[in-house]
Image 1 (cartoon, helix red, strand yellow):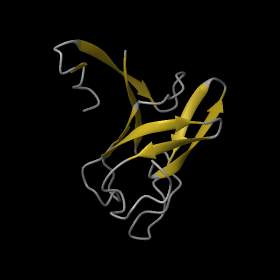
Image 2: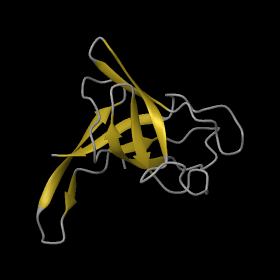
Image 3: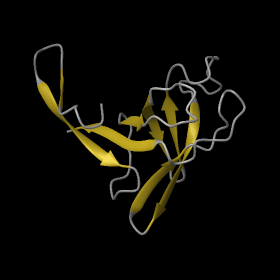
Image 4: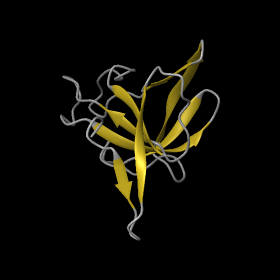
Length: 118
């Protein structure tokens, strides 16, 4: 999904470009971006993950997602928070939530970046 997706179509036939933004790059995530997780050896999903950014604050983002822990969302209109840091103009999202199976958080190792419609 990360390298293959170049555009997205609308029902009316229009198309918009899709631009990948690396985790740790100079572009801050914004509402509507698709957060892309790579596969990781300890990722219980085994196939990576996708979440929608629904809110961006100074030090955290809120995401909407399915199949993370297979429980109802704890927040209104979103699943959970992820940590957002900025250092020297580089924005990094870190997943500090414990794994649904009780394992250690994934951290930043599997968050590839975010896709944005342009």
